[in-house]
Each structure stands twice: as structure tokens, then as C-alpha cells.
Amino acid sequence: MRVLISRLVFGVNVCSGVCMYRFRAYIHTSYICTRAYTISHHTHNKVNTRLLQQLHISPPCIKSICDRDVNWSELCSIICSGEVHMLGRHRVVAEQYKQHTQQVKTKYQTMGDFIKHQYLPHLYDIVHDDDGNIRCVLSSEYTYSVYTCTDDERTIKHLKHITRLTHNNFPYAVQSYISHYVLWSCRPLSEYEIDLLLSHVYDIPSTHAVLKYVNPPHLQSIKDLFHVQVFTCPHDRISTVND
Image (cartoon, rainbow, N blue to C red):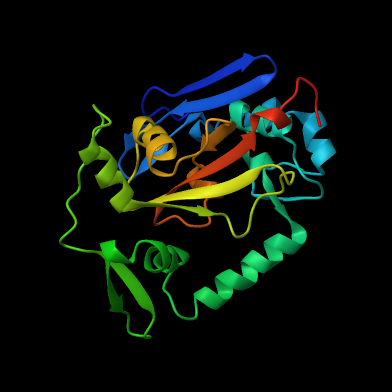
């Protein structure tokens, strides 16, 4: 049964061999819905079996271990189809992430608390639970505001204040010319806000193609902080054939 919360739209433009992907995000409670969230009993029947075999990935829909790097063309296909469970980490990187997570949880309640403290400390107050672990609580001084009508200076200043773009320290298995970032935010972001951030705040160069999506809840290792997976690639590395 398809889960439909609001209108879900994926857009893809293929021009001169360049696959440009964008998603229209709609806020429902505390997260953005994308086509990647429309999970049904028939999902696995629509998986690109050949690509799964090439990547050495087996259903069901779980965050995968990849034996080789995905190229830009494959990344476009995976994200544009909504089959984002096909993306994963190399086994070594996945093990490093697991060890990092275990270490973090000796000091913080969750990985989300660690990220909030590391990248957005100005937005959160620190409290300790009964075991002495750190928990980050959104400051009472923070004003929840959403600007979706204009890219004026006030909007940009607000978005810069509540977000951080960081390199993914434990990136998915993509080829070396592809950069993998994570956009963190203390609240859900609209498509407009994400595009504004990438173009006006974090200055992703116009010479780079961008892919972005939000992992569905069952694939999120950090569930208590909104974040967007962002991939960039120089246009001159994109061709009409696979790398």
C-alpha cells in the first residue's frame, strides 16, 4: 500500500548527457517526504536488478555494503528512481562508522546530540541525563521561522544561522570525483530553502552538478536531526556514457 502524505514530485532533466536531479519537498510533521518515502509491497519488484548485481547488493531495502564505487550516471539513476537503499558504504567505512557511533554514545545520548553539539552548538542547550550523557535541547531563544517567498538578505541570514553543510566523514561508495556532503538543520527545510542554501550560502559552484535527497526514516542512522544528502560533481566529468 503506497503511503501518500502529500503530493510527491521528482524532477529530472537530461540534456547533453547531464542528468540533473531535483526534488520537491513537502513538510509533514518533522520530516520531508520525497518519492523515496513511497514504499510499497511491490517496491522490490521495481529494483534495477542488473544494477543491484553490479553493485553486489541484495534486497531487502536496507542500507547496503557496496563492493565498488558508484559513478555519476549510476548515482543519478538510483536517486531519480527513488531506490536510495542501493547506496551504501564500503565495508571498511561502514565498520569505521559503527565504531565511531559506539564511541559517541559513551558520551552522548544519540548521534543526533553529537552532531548538534559539534555543528550547531549556538542553537542548543546542553543537559545531562542520569548517566551523565549529553543531550542537546533546542534553545528557548530560537525562533522557529520559515521563509519561502523571497531570497532576501533576511532569509539567507536565517538559513545560515540554523544550518551547516559538512563533508560526510563516512561517505557512501561513490567515485573519487564525486563529493558527498550532509546539510544539517535544526528544522525541516523546503526545496526552496535547500536550493537557496546551496546556491547562496554554501556557494556550490555553478560548474558543478548537484544531486540531493532525504533518506527515508528506515534508512536514517540519525533520526533526531533533519539532514539532506548532497552530492556534487564537476560538469566536465559528466558524459553520455558510464565512466
